[in-house]
Image 1 (cartoon, rainbow, N blue to C red):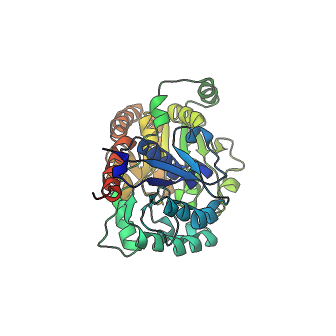
Image 2 (image 1 turned 120 degrees about the vertical axis):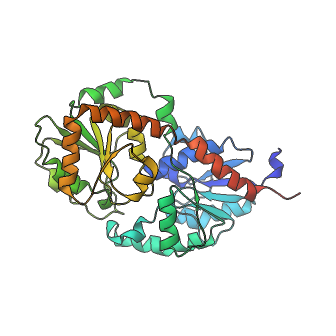
Image 3 (image 1 turned 90 degrees about the vertical axis):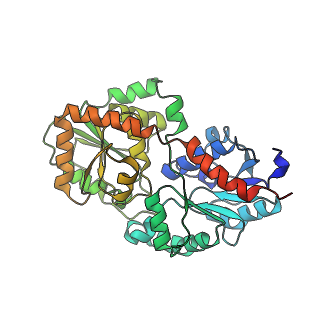
Length: 369
């Protein structure tokens, strides 16, 4: 089918100016898959794009002279309108008063508990997101649990978002068996009884309870590694003060994909005590590398990962500690979870998710002859 059959599709490339966490990984992977679509897809970026290695795998066009929210609100919509196209926003936000556009809203966390975020962030999202949800030509999210929350909190019960799941990152799949010098170096620094938690330092990730639970793990060789950075959008978690004098706990901050692969491979188990998620990408990543998972007993994890992990009440430090001790002591349990996790992770691929999105977009982009 000719490209002339479709309106041009433009992808909001603001995610390429941001630190790469779960939302940005999703945006890049879906954008990359859409480069193979039968319609012409281009990623529009502001001047301060920070990921040239990602841009090389996308069709990218720089537009405007602004950055951040100003670029998104003042220049992005104008650029798409001028080109007569359709806009796809993959990372929660987009321009107001623009149509037609699709919005991927990953969760409703800022409505579930505003205290997880700074007052400025909550105020901004409470102004922006409801209007974007109302005006979106196509509303998309990443799990059935997130879809129900969006319908509830934004009072659109009759409008079920299209659900497309996160997947295992292409770089993890393409280089799964590659052991670079960096990977081996990181692995050599870690003990054989290392628990891992991966996330941004957002209070809803519940790392403070995890740290306190780890204090009940009595094996002197046990180690807890926390990765991720804080952000001004998130309320202070008080985490650094809690772990300041504990030599068994390591706060690594932001890590590269290479380092993350090494951590997933070396960890005796992955522990994720999050209070709320739209998906929970680190759980999927850990499972992909065969890392046994203990995670919160929350609806989205039960929906997506079934019996591939062992669960705990995320508000009960004793319960978290009990699961960590159980994983330390039972090699057979670790082997069982590793096998089940790998099987579950194989079901989540961005090629599958993007095909669902592509079908929905094709209906909207096709020019009636």
